[in-house]
Amino acid sequence: MRGFTLLELLVVLAIMGILLMTMPKGLGALPGMRLHASQRLIADQLRTARNHAIESGTPTAFALGSVGLPSGARISIDHGSDPIRFFADGSSTGGLLALIDGSRIYRIRIDGLTGRITADE
Image 1 (cartoon, rainbow, N blue to C red):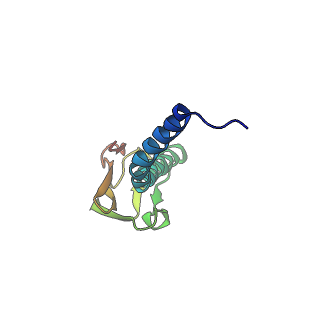
Image 2 (tube, helix red, strand yellow):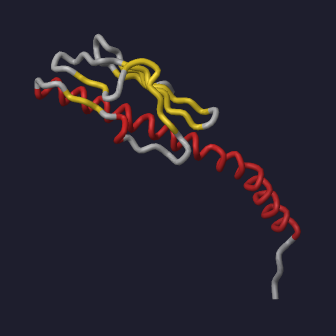
């Protein structure tokens, strides 16, 4: 019957130690990653609404109430109104959205004149 060598046991213990030290950091980053993914999704949905307004030639509204956020997160409108409206020329009512979860804040800016949507990285 063959057993493990001391070297093999030390390598396994070292790997487990590294994993245990990095796990809390990785798990703590999950809420931030979810909020950042929501920011990108909302920015994409806003761009889709703007493109629809331009292509159809009719104003298009984007309601923030229909946006899904991770548990515990909220969205605030620092400037602008809900719903955000996009017009046939690409312009919009504009606004600054903030997705907030604890100390994490991700912003989305909608330029009123051009309708350009930018998301903080």
